[in-house]
Amino acid sequence: MAEVLVYVDHVDGAVRKPTLELLTLARRIGEPIAVALGNGAADTVGALAEHGAVKVLTADAPEFADYLVVPKVDALQAAFDAVSPAAVLLSSSAEAKEIAARLAVRIGSGIITDAVDLEAGDQGPVATQSAFAASYTTKSRVSKGVPVITVKPNSAPVEAAAAAGAVETLAVSFSAQATGTKVLSRTPRESTGRPELTEAAIVVSGGRGVNGAENFAVIEALADSLGAAVGASRAAVDAGWYPHTNQVGQTGKSVSPQLYIASGISGAIQHRAGMQTSKTIVAVNKDSEAPIFDLVDYGVVGDLFDVVPQLTEEINTRKG
Image (cartoon, rainbow, N blue to C red; front, side):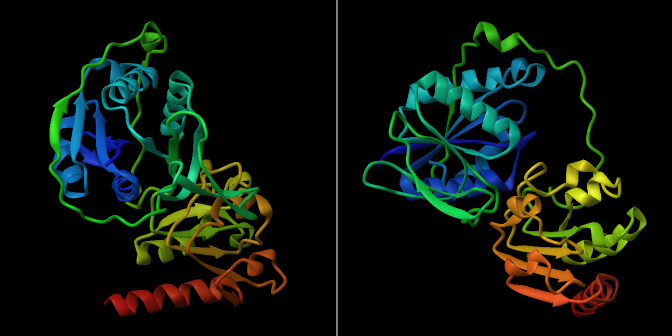
């Protein structure tokens, strides 16, 4: 069976959920071979083997932490040369998409970004994407070289599938460009205790209808009752009511959770582009003619300040 390289996204050995989803997709088209780099790479092996990685290539060097993406591209290219895979899969994070693009240029291959599904095809893997602000669904395959594909988080279930997880040390020769841009300092992001927005299974977002930064407490309370991430529309972010890092939309982050709850969001195309691939969409809005209702699975016409607190209370009651 063909081998498929999977780039591992981890934090000091803790494998992030999108990588486990990639392993599920990789098993559809071949045998997953994981590539784990940097501090804690060896600690990823257990989780990767439990989710289908037949082999784990590990490498650790100061370059991975001290410089930007080029050392990781060098390592992934070394893995590509060693394995000769049928495809290379990465998660659709900003960094991983840059790594994917650089790798595709180096190996002379086509690239597909932001796939939401993946299946085997007679002439290579076929990726499903949402195009033109999610107005269309397309199926694509790379016609030149080995496909390099990035996949949106929450596009596949995490499925355990025990595999050998044989560990091999990856020999990496760093290029002259690897040390071109040095990281001088890092500031840890302050944790809210909520899931990462792009990886969350549930996202609760607020928009112009929230009518003030202080009122986002209503959105946060619902999110916390569901164990969800908090998002915001561009209007809310531009008004200074919520941080830009939480913006969902064409100029913000794209999310594809199992459940997306939009409160006080009209549904402009800018916002829809970032959340339209969500599996189930619920909207709360006073305006029954709001465009968001053309998209939703369930809609509530009402004042969010009446509806959302009642929903939060009901969820907490059922949990209690």
